[in-house]
Length: 258
Image 1 (cartoon, rainbow, N blue to C red):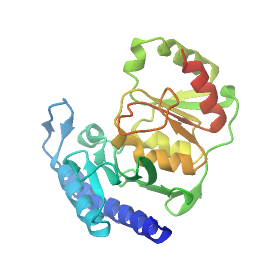
Image 2: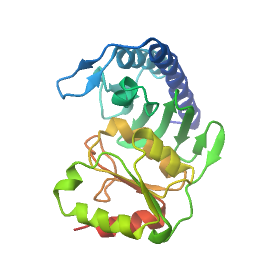
Image 3: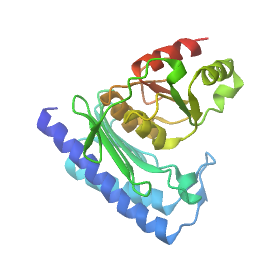
Image 4: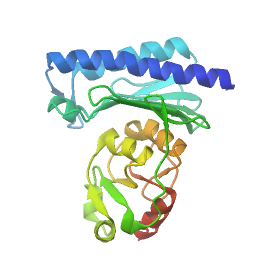
């Protein structure tokens, strides 16, 4: 794809996120009924209507690109241009009336993540990035912190259920003891904080690529490192995250390599 087409794609992702935000705000104010999916996670009409709004915008902008969405699955071929869409990541927060949910839209080109938009309309932040174009928060460029010493690092954990069952749990405990402080912001929030220099490391062991594809592009373009817990690059099958400033990521990866 040429530069002009990348620009079209990024604008489409931003427009799609804005369309989803309108849907989400409407149902946030009105309230929704909750259904439980086969995987025991909740879903609402807000999730489905937001994804429909996103798909309409993305399809109009790039009709040859496939779309893989949280609610309606894969439409097209996953090996070329592929949109990755989670219309309402954090439905449990949405249902419980806390603002820690977002819309996640990323574009993958031949297996590589090339752009992403993370929109949290109730929380009040939108971040976006494209490869080589930097990371942006509401129009201002952002960068990760320069933190290089674990004793000065701020850590945040998300869903770490799987880690509690193996030796990495002890390694995480030691890292927490050696760090400056530990928080659990979760969902989009700690990745936004990492990208803009307010956190130094994010650890999660149980998630889906749709949750973090856009955030990976944002963190990387902000100067951070974003891999799975084994230090491997992201794929459609990724289920864990280790993201941080370059120095802190490297130290954490070494500690978790048991």
